[in-house]
Length: 136
Ligand SMILES: [Zn+2]
Image 1 (tube, rainbow, N blue to C red):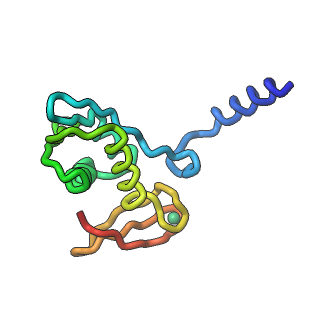
Image 2: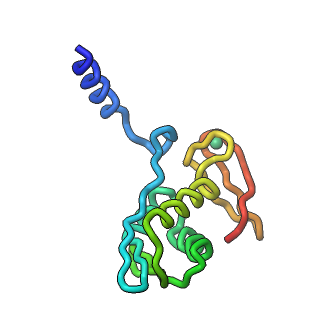
């Protein structure tokens, strides 16, 4: 009986269209990290940025600064000088999302980052909140 109910529930949940607006279900993407020699490669940097609806170059700039490392984008991948664990990278991506993607008021990821001269504004399309964020 319980199993049937759970199966039904699973099926019902699968049928709910997955849009980015369902913030409770929004998952910050995880990095695919490989280290080769003394370099760390994030294979899916571009995908992460796309999921977060941000420019890959913006996320890249943030990571370079937060990791204190030199690096470059190579297509969809990012290559950093130095060794960084997946945990370290994921933690930075989570902080990036909290600071530059998720709305401070409602927590939803449907936001836009707008630049007004030297100030960046995080504008939420779900609740209309506007918060200033630091430039990177
Ligand atoms: Zn909001």
